[in-house]
Image (tube, rainbow, N blue to C red; front, side, top):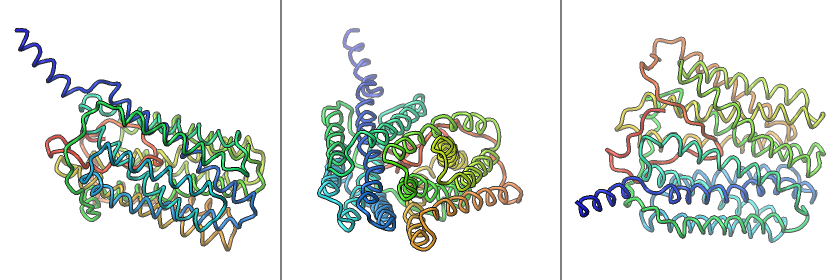
Amino acid sequence: MPILEKNRTEATQREEPPLVAIASVIVSMALIAVGNGLMFAYIPVRLGVEGFDPTWAGLIITGLSAGGLAGCILTGPLVRRVGHARAFMVLSALIALANAAVGAGPHPIVWIAARALYGFAICGLFIVAQSWLNDAIANAIRGRVMAFFYVAYVAGLGVGYATLALVDIRTADAPLIGIVFTALSILPVGMTRLAQPPAPQAASVALGRAWRISPVGVAGMLAVGGLSMSIAGFAPIHATAKGYSQADVALLLSAMPVGTLILQIPLGWISDRTDRRYVLVAASALAAAAGMFALGFDGGALAALVVIYIIWDGASESIYSLASAHAADRAGKDDMVALSSSLLFAWSLSGFIVPGIVTALSAVFGTQAFIYVAIVIACAFSLFVLLRVFTKLSVPTTETGSFAPMTAQAPLPVELAFAPEDNARKPG
């Protein structure tokens, strides 16, 4: 009996890793988020203080998005070569190097390259972290663990945004702080006892197949990729150009993630009890309305703008999690790998193209161009979903999964590491 009990205990430990081991990955990503949030806020404000044209900040956002697109393609081969833990450390080191390049001084060309490197690394880190967690945790707790993962990352971003108010903008303090938090993030993963998944197979990108499974899901990723990068990337650029102070920009950015936390839960609860497409229409309509209010109050009282941007960002981010859940509702077990890879690619592609468009428009129409672009995207997506609802081509699913809060600042995982029987998640 003692031997049988010992074998049973060992088997349980293999199947259910300790929570502290799972937490190591989540804590690492939350620490990285603090540095990431600070750098997102620091770069446009520093460029504005130095007198650079806002177009440079837009080009830097476009470079970041291009790096992210490369990351979603190249991370799989990297993980196959060195494994999850080493890939995590390599990608973290690249973020530290990118921050060091920014800390060398305001050289826009160098900063474009540095942020492209950052974009590659952060997209890769999400793929590694989320595929690692998905391999380690059981289906029974998967939704709760991943929800906590997203909330922890959003909270870290908020802390990073708020930290901008405490640094001397004309020094390299912000990049140094970013490097410190990135270095700290390596420690939990470096010391984790969480078992590494086996060498992954290549994750295929099949947009046509994903579209056949869920046109609304793919369109949602295309919409939210552009919305997220426009709002999160260009809001500090525009606020700086409008003359808001460093502390004002920090407050605005740190408040925006609150919308993600307070709007997703009620919208997700409703979507679990009705056709998710109705909720997607409501979320995108709310995003469009908030964008219009952002135009109306542009340059006005900071308190009003903070409230508007909280709603605007929260509604836009909700499209991400709702579209993901909607697509998963319609996917079979054998479709999940290609679907998650394709959704990530669609998100990354839009996140690359739309900032480029906004940057070009900003050079002609001013930094408020991102607001118009975001309104157009939200309206177009809302109309597309309504069209799908009222056509015979789209038949509501008879079964929906449970909603899990997500953020477009934390990309969908590519299911890198699972055998087919382990790869199937409950829809939603």
